[in-house]
Amino acid sequence: MSTWRNWSGTESATGIEALRPRSADELAAAVKTAAEQGKKLKAVGSGHSFTGCSVPQQVMIQLDGLSSILHADQESGRVTVGAGTGLRKLNAGLAAFDLAMANLGDIDKQTISGAISTGTHGTGARLGGLATQVVALDLVTADGSVLHCSAEENPDVFAAARVSVGALGVISSLTLQCVPAFLLRAQDMPLPLGEVLDGFDEFADGNDHFEFYWFPHTDVALTKRNNRVAAGVGASPVGRLRGWIDDELLSNKVFELTNRLAVREPGLVPRINQLASRALSARQYVDASYKVFCSERNVVFRESEYAVPREHVVDVLRRLREWIDVSGSRIPFPIEVRVAAPDDIWLSTASGRATAYIAIHQYHRLPHDPYFRAFENIVADYDGRPHWGKLHTLTADDLRRRYPHFDDFLAVRDRLDPQRAFENAYTRQVFGR
Image 1 (cartoon, rainbow, N blue to C red):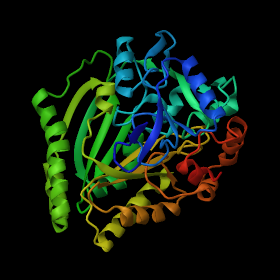
Image 2: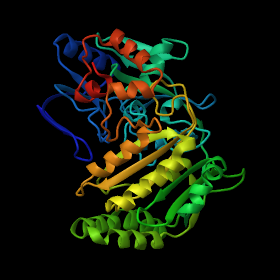
Image 3: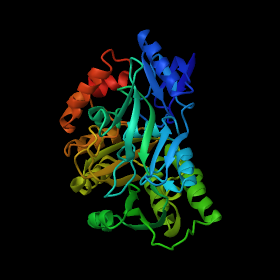
Image 4: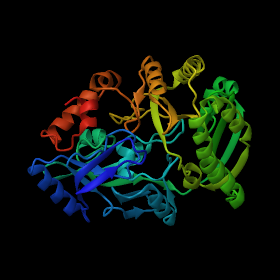
């Protein structure tokens, strides 16, 4: 029997049977046997979700044995990968074929199937989340059968399974629509928060990838603009010393120390954040897309993220800032804001609408409940949709009102898993049955 724990320490399980299939056939046989025995199964990836979406109740399926590129066609850009492939390994593998994902999030520790199943996304007004780059997938259902799903084959399952929170079955492989490898010019620059909010649409629409971080208790935002370079422009990456100072020393080691100080002396947080915002400096470099998108993040925290219609993001941020100021809360972690194009995936947080994402964080040794509750109450006024892998309290009744295809998803689930082999406490919370 095994013990499972997620990265942030918010969820764990003990006395769990662990299965490590080495092939798609072994996976199908393992799922069928466990389901016939009435056991509850969960595929677990890297454990980077904060919610209980991947907590195993009786059997956990670890997909390490399905973690390679199975086929790559450079001409079409179609790449088929095992579901357990980690994003870091995938990005390096795609580069070897001179290919890349069109868009990525800001960390690469997740597995590809875990990332798409929870709606992981990056930023870009004309681009969707990782699941929008999936053009086909193989899904092992509770009876051990394998459904091949695409826009042409089992299209309803395809619309449901790309973001499914693991509730329909276990993905064994995915086919991604990749693009030729490309370079990005990264421009990081601190700007007054008011200027960023006033010009938010221009920033979002005027860059391939735009996001910003705002440290509460300050008037400064760190803007990040990533854009494809012109033909003939070569890489000019961050120097080794500057990269170590910015990305390892300041973003991880010093940030960990300042958060520990915030635990001991909460009253110092506004001054700490002021100093941190003044320490931000502009930098510009050109590197391979996946090296620009992804950063190392080692400080442990709690996170809640909501997707709101893009036209309301500035209102949400201003209300959240007012709450922080009035409540007296001390928040040492920055707030992150990103954007995405609308898509047609039933449970995607950007389904059917141009979207802005607001992610709030709190150091794991500081209380987060009042802050996260206040945030959830604010975004409720704008039909906010929670990231499936980040902390929230919404139930099926709340989510049904926010997703037009919610009952369509439940109908597919009823058909594929009527005995609820893939349920756990989290799926009962968000799907109701």
